[in-house]
Length: 85
Image (cartoon, rainbow, N blue to C red):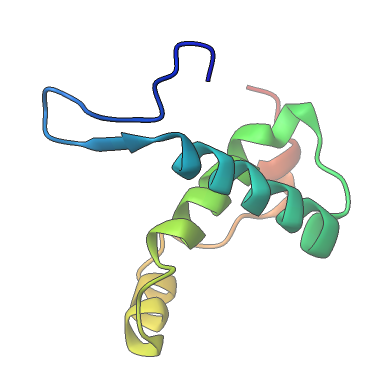
């Protein structure tokens, strides 16, 4: 906002908008309030991956969402979740 730049097209052709970033932040806040209630810094990358997955499928129909869920790499076990890197 400070540069008075709110939208642009990157050299690779991607449209970049301030509203997209603000929308992602709003989705993350709603995800914390409605689903997770609290997120840890340790697993923040996983929460963001979940948010990205959901946002990438937000315009998909039910069959596309089901196909994406069924072809995901597998479930995350508690042991894997708490494993130290």
